[in-house]
Image (cartoon, rainbow, N blue to C red; front, side):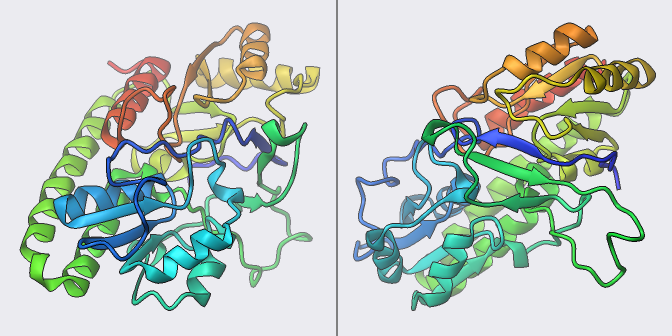
Length: 336
C-alpha cells in the first residue's frame, strides 16, 4: 500500500474547504424537480456521481443533486423534502459509506433503481482512513470533516478488525471508468428506450477517462520524487495507481499552527524524499500549509479531491480539474 502510516492521528478539513458541490448543468440543482418529469429522473448524491449521470445520461436525464454548493459531502444531512423527492425519482446514484444520511435515505426509499457506485468497483483499505461525522471545529463555517488514520499495532488491531474502506475511488480514472460502465448498464436496464444513447455516451466518457489515465501515467512516470504531502488523505487510489506515496499531515486543523516537532519531522522527510510542496484544497485556509512550507522550506499548491465543483475550482468539470491536479503533481514531483 502506498499510504504511509506514520502515526497519522487525524486530518481535519473545514466544511468550506471540503469542497461542496457546484452545479454546472441546467438540469441540476434546486431549479429542477427530482421526479415526475418527462425525462429519466436521477438523484445523485454528490458531484462525482452527478458528473457520471450527466455524462452518460445526456439529454435523456434530469439530474438533481443532494449535495448543494458549499455543503460538505461527508456530513450531509437531508431535508424531509429531499428524502421525499428521492422516492419520486426513477433512479438514485450514490456511493455507499461516504454519506451516512444518504445511505439511510436510500435504504428507506422505494425508488426503483438504486445504483451504489461502491459495488461497481473494488474499494480498498488505505491505512484505515475513517470519516468521523458531526464534529465541529470553530463554528458553522468550519464544521469539519475528520479523517482518522490510526497507527497500526498488534495490541490495537486484530486480524479480524474491519478497517474503513477508502471511499475516494473517483480520484483513480481507471476505477472511475469501471463505475461509469456499471452506471451505464443500470441506466440501459432501467430506461431501455434510450439504451443505445447511454451506451454511446458511456463509451465516450470511458475514452476520456482512458486518455486521462494515460496522461497521468506518462506525466508521472519519471519524477525526482514519488512522495507528496497533503492535508486530506483523499489520494490513496491515485497514489497507488501511479506509484506515488501520499503523506498526510499529522492531525492538524487547517486553522491551527503545526507543532515544532511536526515541522522538524516534515523538514527531515522533505529532505530525505525530495518533497517540494505541501498541498491543500481549493477552499481550505492555506494558513497551515504556508506555515509548514515556510518553516520547512517548501512550496504550497492545490490538489483538489473533487468532492464538488465551485467557482474556485481549477476547471469547470471532473476532467478539467483532474488535468489541473496532474499539472500540480508534475510540478511538485519534478516530472521530466
